[in-house]
Length: 262
Image (cartoon, rainbow, N blue to C red; front, top):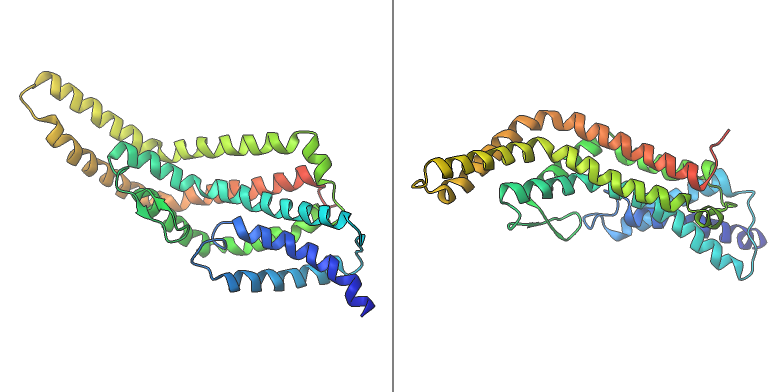
């Protein structure tokens, strides 16, 4: 009983970090994954982490334990949030394309998040999700949260790292980087549609009797879908680079809030 009372607080701290990670991390946090599965996998991963890192750990049994829980939850949320922000680059790029092509008014329900999503953004998101699972990206996510205890052990200094502003600076840069990546991913289609608008503008000036508004929308849809069809083979390379940036950003975050293991 004494051994159980000593190990339970440590296990609960580990469980808090991993559960918070699963709440926001892409793929595993989607509504399509049952909650009982999320709790179950969080429990088994926590048990594995406890047997690896937490057997000889001890935590104070006083009011400061509440601060430790908050600290572990923040670490899990930060790791999951960084991965989520960079994964949502795909839907942001799709939104830029939909606005330009004219699909912005026809949002569809995203079954993964339960919210409305742009049509092309949802298509690219499903494509990226299948590619992510094919590349065993979910295994890398699990490996990342488990190895986070090498970088950020239970006896970490998260609040001190938050006070010096380095964490806030990193999150702002990551947020800005996500928009830059979204612009880069949508640039070919947006540029082609912009040139189509310019061509229609010249047509309207040279032939005023021509009904540009009746032809412009179908023409932009045809041009956009044709270019999208040509770009589909390159999705594997684009999304592969995006996933690499996502895992690299998670490692950078661990370096900011913790220490690189020897």
